[in-house]
Length: 567
Image (cartoon, rainbow, N blue to C red; front, top):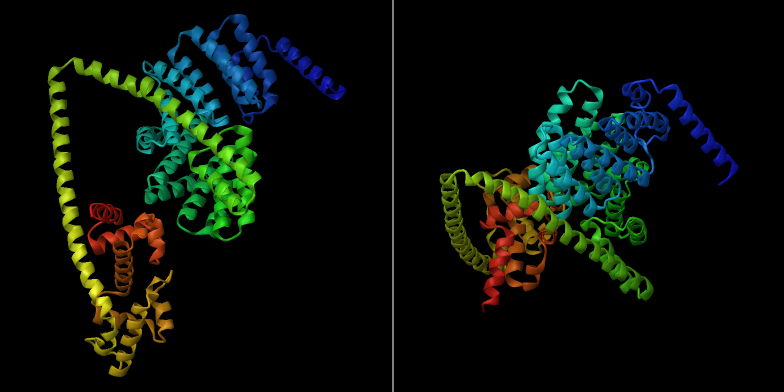
């Protein structure tokens, strides 16, 4: 240790001793006034916290000790010190035999593991202990806090529907607290809880492909946290979510803007795991734009973070599959071997986490909930009978509904097959199309010009020029050397539909024919099929396919594969 460090340490110890002597007669609240306005993780709060804890020890006031150690967790900047103080908080809380304090103490330690260290296995152990004590608590805030963290674990496991159930049951409570809390500290806690809930709900809805819900919550979160100094990190989380949303919507420039905007604050707070998520998406964007070296540089940063923390979100696993394939193509055996080992390590951690967490969650949380429900049902046989009857009725109804759905799907599939035959025959005789160009009912230009436009549209259809991405009426009018008003009117009068419907039918008929005639397309993802026929949005493609063909593309693929496999 250098002389300067030794001197600083001695001065700090002297300062602590002086404070303990001068302030020994002060109340707990007077000590807290000196540091409660400081930033979290600010070590300068420690002398007053030490005095607070010392007074609690002298008076054997375990409630005060629990609160003092909890403050030590909040204001210490070192994670190992935080964990040590968290253990002290639990021990002091247990001596009070106060279930609220005990539950809160276990929750605090669980947060350190989950938020600071991203170690979900020990975090779940702490949250489940907190849950067991919260069952007999009258503190609604505490119950909802534990509920949020259990939902967070389920979200990590990929049980997004169940996680959303947790979050939805608590979001109104936290939102209400942000508006009605008078105490600034209480209001801060409610706001932080509310924003974290919104963030986790966005993640779940994104993974459930409910883009509309996810997008609305992103905008809500950004607006609520904008220009709020206390919630810059939360604001950055919402910006990060917006960047990912733009990435999924094939808007790379917007995605880069929001991801870059979110990154500095998340880096500042040392939230390395979310930093790795941002690097992962930035890497994908540059690789998709044929900037592989730049993309790989971000992927290697993800690997560096993984090496440091030994944690990774499941969605980032593809980071390693790409690197393995890339170096394989580059004939770089050393790098290929390295990233293969890393991929195996990632899979080992994910599988280990999943087995432990899911088993523990069911046995100690979901299992306990089932036990509670069973005990309550014992009080009334009638309720058991009614519930049993309802379950049987729902099951039978579900089976009947499923059977009807399958029959309806089969009918729709057969009808579509008949239409495809007609479509195929129509394509085979397309060379005659120039001889029978339809004339618009309402003549807006001369017959010659109408005939000429009809011929151009026929060529447009024959050569599959409708597969162009971003094609709109004005763009096509320019290509056909006419004006958009006349083109739109002509299509309406001769095709019986507006331009957008005309274009959609051409694209969906094209891709449906490919799916029906070429087996390889049955292995494509819905997103890839959408891109194949010129439709940018996966959801828009699925909706148009259903509107035109009467069934979803996934259902058609399933039916077509079944038919081919039975031949």
